[in-house]
Amino acid sequence: MQLSWAVRTDPGLRRSSNEDSYCTRADLGLFIVADGMGGHVAGEVASRLAVETIQTFIAETAGADKNRTWPFPFEPSVSLEGNRLKAAFRLANRQIANAMADSADLRGMATTASAVLTGSSTACVGHVGDSRVYVLKDGALAQVTDDHSWVEEQVRAGTMSATAARQHPWRNVVTRALSGGGDPEIDIVELTPRPGERYLLCSDGLSGVVSHESIARMLGENDGGLDGICQRLIFAANQAGGPDNITVLVLEVDAP
Image 1 (cartoon, rainbow, N blue to C red):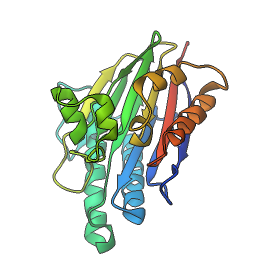
Image 2 (tube, one colour):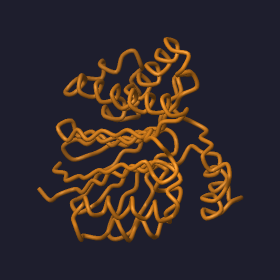
Image 3 (cartoon, one colour):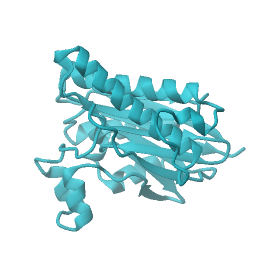
């Protein structure tokens, strides 16, 4: 699968540091956005440690069989790529636990993570937390991932609108993350990307303040290429107040 990509990250207007991390390893077919939580030092450490651990595991298991998901069991209902992502996320969770055990300053840190792992003709999304993956297909934007957050659970239950969720004081309360506890449940979504589709990985610094409709419009634009799209998405988030760190990673599936 041939891919073009661009990425940008910005601290936003209200944060003095950037706790987001990302990975663009086209050689591995791996792209990640992670949003750290836990304060200036700890959140940055958590997201960076997760990205580094996932990237290393995927690199080490490239071309491997199912036995390379050890010490985690192989799930027959999930593709090999999906099993590799699940194992990588869970290993990252254990690395975060180890880091917290070694340093009291890091206790309580956590991170979200959303990753896309592509193969020759298929792709797999691994996800935990409220960073998102979107796909723009035939001009229509769809959210691939489900947020693990209190407000989005209310939206899915029909008790809160998406607009109200973006404004709710509990909008940053995450119900699932890589936080160093027991092995977390990782959502896996299997995909068959087609030429011309665009994928967006982003932290909630974008999705929490910019509407679905605005994201769809900007993701479909061609002025300035993929980097231009990233610039406009970050500008829109800052225009909406820029309350959080913003990371946007855009992928486009190219015709062979």
